[in-house]
Image 1 (cartoon, rainbow, N blue to C red):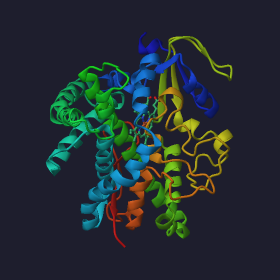
Image 2 (cartoon, rainbow, N blue to C red):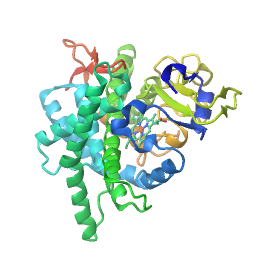
Image 3 (cartoon, rainbow, N blue to C red):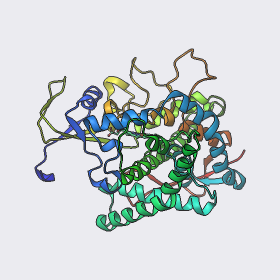
Length: 398
Ligand code: HEM
């Protein structure tokens, strides 16, 4: 079916969106143009194939892994990444956010950097940026075929430079009877469920985890900082709370992610006729677009001030503070708790609370008195139709 004859059904309310995510006859459609990186990766699989891969990878995404990452593995990486910026007293948040989140996502994905040199990290960063372009080709404003070919070349180079050596290192540990590190690559290699994944699928899955973890969290990082700066301008009395109350920064993260989902739409193809509980019919062959910008501002759920940023917003029972920005149903984000932490319930102890890597990374900014650089205002990114910041200079210290 060609694009111009396709019926497009747009979902704008919270209840219909949740119901849409639950439908088994609706198949992933968001990454059709991003096949070069996204072919056969988890988010593009359907039905039994998806269930089996998700079951395997779910073995990693458990509370004990979140605790290990948040308490032991992430803090030194966050400190190392920040160190040169703190020393200089300034940072550009878009670049810092991508470096931070790439370093964390590389650990989760299982991409080792044995040399540990700045050059090696720059290579990985360059691969990540090309993979992001590959995955978001649908929104690319330049020559798409040329970009697709460039991304395919980069994927092969990434395999040779990073994936194969990381696999060899894990294989040596396994052959020695040891425990390989807790990451996606080890899970795929030990493959306890016998999925027989070909090497090229493993390479794309690892690249996908690198970008799924890094890009979403990096864009959220800059946006959370921006929302907090704006909030503090309007609520100067909260200046102290962003340093002393880590739950407040986590709530600001959730509120930012609700208003500005990293992926503003979800898309599905109808494999069959579907009827939603609201009575809305979706005919086979139609494309369903879940408009998260509307869904997450549905006044029936988020109230009359749904459009505004309010970290102290009261929510109805069972409604997550980030709305449906992490999806729902079979493709619900596997890294949600890692990225945004767990939702804190009144009275729960704080010492074993999981805050999430985005709030943890943003907290460091405010612990060091970050504020927008008065002489160098933020700019938007002109190379994409999506509303990303291109540069966001801040001053640190004080
Ligand atoms: C602020 C951060 C993040 C946001 C907003 C986000 C958002 C999302 C959304 C909306 C989906 C569902 C896509 C759909 O229904 O079509 C998704 C899926 C996914 N996310 Fe995230 N994500 C974030 C962080 C992460 C991190 C840190 C990881 C990796 C550790 C990750 C890994 C994945 C994976 C593997 C899927 C596919 C799940 C499946 O298809 O079963 N994400 N994410």
